[in-house]
Image (tube, rainbow, N blue to C red; front, top):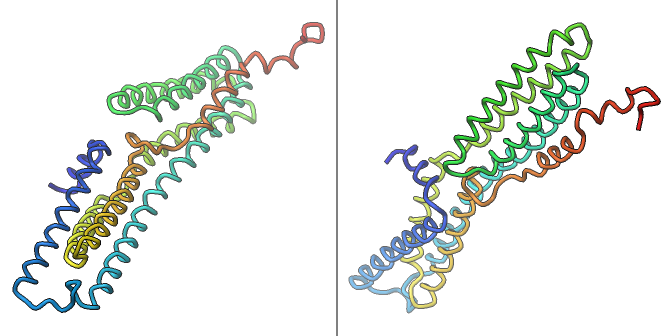
Length: 282
């Protein structure tokens, strides 16, 4: 199995199944280390009553320290990608909001058309961010069609604003909106490199074997099981953060939700209230 196949498998398997599978694998590695220790003790003189020498404590500390370092490094990579996704939600909300405000300077019917399309596009972006499994592709298809329609509507409106100074600003805001679509897609496809997970999992297996070999006796086995459980939880947390389309820890869509509420509360007609004659003003 290559790295891409392993990445696809890890993406699809639910965390509630992956957790026990990972823990059982680590327990199996620890059991192999424990059996190796028993075989060695049956053919050699045990140096201490605990079944080891004074150097084994240093070995455990070094192994667990390196494992903690590697786990922290992997967690840092996952958090960096999460923060990028979270930041781009706000940037996209600002881009859509700016485009909506500038669209109010257009002539009818372009103003009402583009304003309505921006509201629908925001609705779909929120739904797309929350979609899972089979719901993602239909939402992506609708997203691409809406972007094409927005640019088509912009092309139709441009001749009416070409002579105005703000025409370039409106085009820039629409381009920024379209660019943010690509940026958010790239952020959602960004994952912690599978090679990093492979190294982490291999090192966890080796660490489990070392714990099983060194921590003998009832108390030692309990301590080893507790440590393996904690490290398994850490890896599951990293994998959850690394799953923007399927995990439980996703970037907040509050900026987009707040933008949608603002646009619905401020329809194009609202911006005409100071343009009406005094006798028509409310």
